[in-house]
Image (cartoon, rainbow, N blue to C red):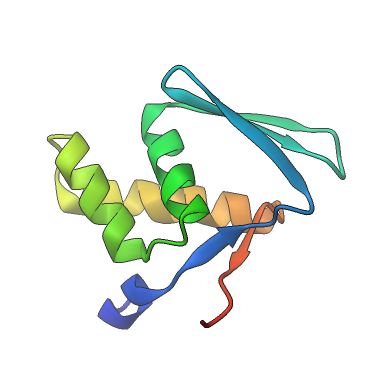
Length: 97
């Protein structure tokens, strides 16, 4: 990943997803497959950032503010979850505004 990749934005595919926060977790329902995803607190923070079409850098900053962990570890977790969500079709690259 390059620095410019951190400026990318993703959005939730609202036509395919229903979700809600439950406490500090996010529950996501894939309307196409019926599969349910449960995201822990950090995953929910990432999900909310994607929902607000924040850049990856902005989401990473939110993670750094919430957790006392090394940036490399947070970035790895962010990118891992993003890949899973994108592969599942739950998030898509945001359209340029």
